[in-house]
Image (cartoon, rainbow, N blue to C red; front, side, top):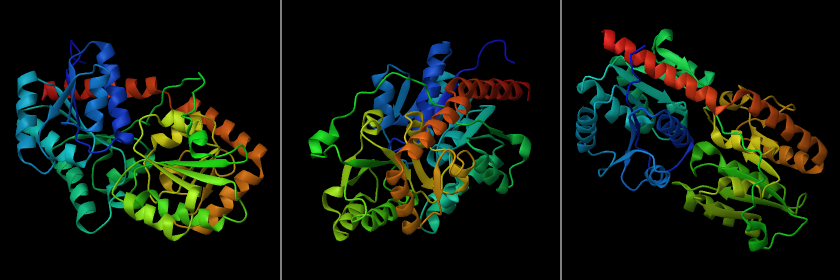
Length: 377
């Protein structure tokens, strides 16, 4: 270990606020509380920059687009100016620019935190390969990899990264048992007492499976006329999903909230949580919903089945299957006592396994160990 705690730069060049940004916020709070020198490099005006600033955390906004090479030069200058000993990058663009700049600046401790399977979470031909290229570059640069689930760890190993360079540290979530004041959306939308609300919190992207959920809802119009869906989040598929809901004649059965910062208050409006994704690492939204005791209806994919057990802590259905998704939603609504028991079991699981203090301790230990190793080299 170093005689003093090494300074840390977190790099988060995200355009929208998502799960990776939650972990960045948690680490920024922990670093701030520890008293060590730290900062978070973000895109100027991004949601994560605004949230960091609102909490009085150390943020360094960069006034460039993610494709602008000046971003790399700005990060290099920032690292040299403030003397950061550890650089931890949290998404593909951050890992391209941030860790390349860190190596050029002579930083010995470079960490790539990987939140998902890049090949599965990006559509098209070039984008998955481009994003995966960031990890291959990080591997050639000799970076350390931190993964948020065993599923993501296996993915990083499949890229040829040696086992000793990959550390597993599950995401954590703050436990707060205080009642959350609902957002008041039910009353605003005129959803009465007989309404049952399913919620999905995810960026509007094909990998999250919103289209399957809309088609499942279509199948339940007659069987569950009181069912409503809150679609919480924004993203590139916003217009396409709204058009699909209109094509399916779902009418007031679906409400798109757009981006919202008050997710806990919106989840307090819900009776169950749904996440029909095609690929996941370890989604914070599922942890948040489970912590609220909501019954979970989710895809049976490695990033979720690694933690949640079908018929014990969640109802897991084959991904991309609107019929199976509709049956699981129908079952949840027809058997409320079983659904509530499922939600309570999931709550206990999250409280037992996903403590933020554990996550922070593991991450800080990795930073210190990597800084000490880099100092010896």
